[in-house]
Image (tube, rainbow, N blue to C red; front, side, top):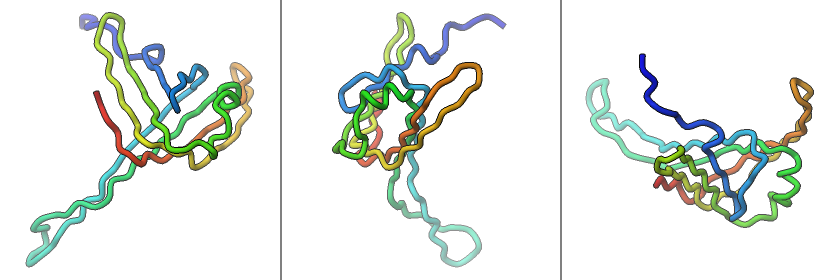
Length: 132
């Protein structure tokens, strides 16, 4: 099977929160969902559907040093998180998570291959996810 080119990898991701680039991010996860309600009439199968509320949320895992640079997450007003994926010589894809607020933080220290102190910040996305 031939090699078809380089795929996205971790070094191709840039993450900004509240206008500043985050350097010591270990992971980012985000998701959205929209409720769909089946409408039933006569019979066992749905005759149609309605749509409910949209929800978005995510989680950032940072080294403690990056968390300290970010400041108190609970005092920040709504802010955008921008996640850019760019390949060498290719175009850039960007997901902008609009109007985020941090909702939970968890602290952790682990000794595995390397010792590191991490902070996990969960957030809600209030303004949607824009893709460009």
